[in-house]
Every structure is written in C-alpha cells, then in structure tokens.
Length: 366
Image (tube, rainbow, N blue to C red; front, side, top):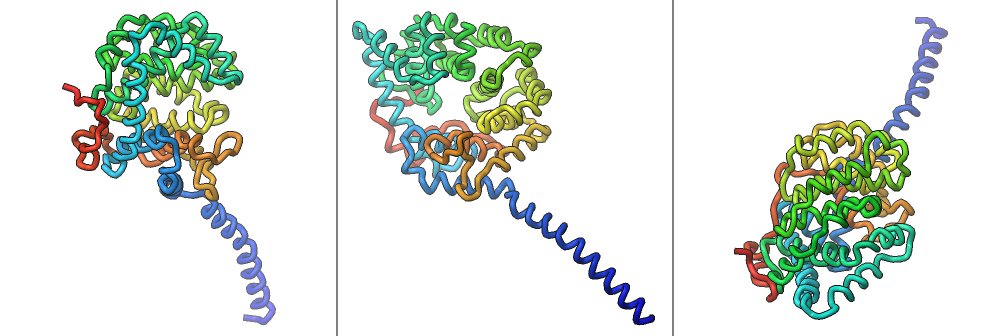
C-alpha cells in the first residue's frame, strides 16, 4: 500500500471517530441525566423516610398507610398508627358533643372559616352557602370515622355519630353543580365514605350529577382549572372505590373514566399537575391495566419532573417543602413501583408492633 493511500485511510478513520464521538457522548450524557424508575423511587423514598419524623402527624400517617398498603411491611404500621391517634382524638371531640345545643352550628361555621381566603377558597365558601352544615358532616364526621373504620375499628361515640349522619341528607350538597365545580374529588370521597359507613348511598346520583356538570363534548370549553377538577374527580371515583389502594377495582365499571384518560392523555400531560398525572396512571394500575400505554406515559412524565438534587418532585412553583409535597411524591412512588398485591388495613390489633398501643377510645369492630 502506498504511503499516500495509508495517510488517506488514517485521516478518514480519524475523521470518523471524531464525528461519532460527540454523538456517543451526547447519548451517554442523556442516559446519565435521565434517572430510572428505581432511582426516582429510591430517591423520594429515602428523602421522605429520612425526614418522616419531622412531618405533621397526619402527613406521617398518610405516608405510612400508603406504604403499608403497597408493601404489606409492618415497618410502616407505627407511622400509620400516628394517624389513628390523630383521628381518634378528633372524633372524640366532635362525635361526643353532637347532642350539645348549638355545637353543630358552631363547628360547621369553624369548618368553613378555615378554608382560607384564596380564589378557590372563595368559590368553595360561595358553593357552601346553601349547605352551611355540609362540610361538618362530611369533611369532619365522615372523614374521621371512615378512617378509623378502615383500620377495622370503631371510634368514640360512634353510635351517636352514625345516628347523626343517617339523619343528615347529603344528596343536595353532593349533587349541586357549584359544589362539584369547586371540589369534585372531595365529594366523591364523601360519597364512598357514606356508603362504607352505611349512612347513605349517593353514588348513582353523584355520578349522574358529575357527568352532567362535565359532559365530554364540552371539554373544549373547560378552563385549565376546571379540566383539572374534572380529572381529579375522575381519579377519585377509582381511588375511593378501591378504599384507597386496598384492593383492585373492576375495569368495566370504570371504563368510562379509563377510556376518557386514554383519549385525552395528550391534554392531560400538557395541562394537569404532577399529582393528577400520577393519579391517572395509578387509576390503570388499580384497574389491573398496568400494561396500558397511559401508565408508561405518565411514568415518563413523573421521571422527568423529578429533581435529583432535592430527591423530590417539586410543587408547580418549585417549592421543595416536604409536608406540602408528600402527597405528590408518594403518588409518584406508587406509580413507578406498583406491587403485584395490595394490602388491606393496616389492622393494628393484629400486628405485633402495634397491637399493644391502640388508643383507649377505639374498639375492635365486631
């Protein structure tokens, strides 16, 4: 081979290597910059659990309950037990004074007053005006008693509480259009909690009212805020039906929701919050449809939203506050690492680590 030809071939080889190397490096950097499902899960988990004792009691409980239901691991039982103490004390205060003259009226006004002063709070207060006691019956009595019931227990003055709720007809408040536009997700929670406790079956009427408020053909008229409220309500139909991740749901029963998510996934990924996007993916997990494309699309979105430096998915405003962000981040964990089996409870009276430490004011359900 002539020296000239050798030089030409060597130059060509060097040029090829020089041209290819940046592409390889760019690909390598991209792979390094994009964490895996497991890395995001582990990062959030490590961060939350390292700081768990610093979080408010009900936030600790929220995390412990969900991790127990995902893993069945008793190490989360004590964090969940913190929640039981909090809700038991609250039920004792409210339920045991229900027959005190003026008590319901006073506490109902307090429940509304703590909603805040922002635009959403103002809309909710306006929606509540025709139903001044609604929030007390639902967000106070139903919330605390249903949580205790989930643990296989009954709380203090339970008979008095159940009797009061049976007398309170919640249908008008649950099906009011302004109420649904203000907090669709919370209302479906109340519907399922009422059914769980046997104090009223409002599911059919609420579903009909929800669909009338948010017909799919009018989606183009929805603001981003109202689109999110619709999505949030839809995910909570499924979440509440699963008794919050204690068991799967029937995919056929919720086909109207799952199909909607499939058909609108592009807008969901563009206009919804990280919390809602995670919930959309989890809805398919709960329906036994983890292989659906929506799951992988929502997982990819959540991975891209993760901040490796903070080991957290920040708020839309970039806030890393853990107490405020625990909900968003535990949802992300669930979406990314869904178990083969869900776990009910925790039933503290059956767990060695907690059975000696039940609050004195609760009883085991018979």
